Image (cartoon, rainbow, N blue to C red):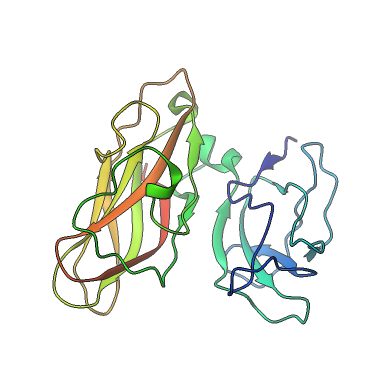
Length: 227
C-alpha cells in the first residue's frame, strides 16, 4: 500500500521558548486515543521508532502515514510534554476517498490573540493565523463535500471569523468559506460548503482570522468532509 507524507510535516521542532527541541521526541497514536500507531520514514513503509527521537537541532526525517488519523504528542528529552497534542493528523489517503470526518488539520495557536478587524492582506505564510498549516491539494482529487471547522472564543463581546483562502489564484484575502464564533467560553463552529478552485492543478489553501472588535482566539481548525 502507499504511505503518504504527513500533512503536519514539521521537520524541526521547538520548545515553548522557541529553542530547538534537542533530543526531544514525537509520540504517535491513533487519533483520540493513547494507542500507539506506527509511522514511516519513507513512502515504501520503513517503520519509524515510536517515539521518534529528534536530533541535537530538534530535527527529524520526513514522517509518512498509513491511511489513518493520528495524534502527535511532542515531549522534551526529559519526557515532559511540549505544547498541545496535534489531533487529528490525517493521511491525505483518507481524504481522497474515505467517508465523512476530519481530513486535514490546519491547527492554530490557542494562545495567539486575534485583534485585527480585517484579514491580513497577502498570499505569504506570515499573513496566516499563527500555528496553522497549509493544505496543498488538487481539488480534482477530492471526493464529496467539504467544510471548515474551528474552535474559538471571544475574550469580550464581538465576532471571531475564521476563513479558508486560496493563496495561489490572486484572491488570498477573499474567503472560500468562514466560521463565525461569538461565545465567551468557547465553541466549535462549522462553515458552509467550501468551493475549491477548479481541478487540474495543485493549490495552496490557508487560514486567516479576524474579529469584529476586541480580542478572540482560534485553534483546532480542520478541514472536514461532510458528505
